[in-house]
Length: 140
Image (tube, rainbow, N blue to C red):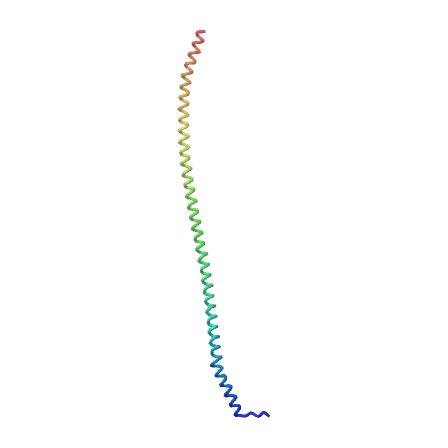
């Protein structure tokens, strides 16, 4: 059978427990500490990445909202300026129409007065020619 010496069993057990204690102090605790720090760092990095992603989404949403507001303001400004331009155009057209109407009226009046002058001149000429025709007929 197997003969186990009690002394060597105690020595081996003490040696085993001593090595476990020494390895625990020198190796296992520092490794566990490093692993714990690494896990904490990774969790912190993941949390920071999630927070950055949320801030990015909020920033994109805010940027889209501001872009939409800027577009609507630009559209309003464009419509306002367009309407203002149409009003100025209408005003200029009505002014030009009024000026043209005045010039046309003035031209009509000038033509009318020139026509009357021409009629008076022709009346005088007609009377003169009729007197001359009558004289020539009478003398002949």
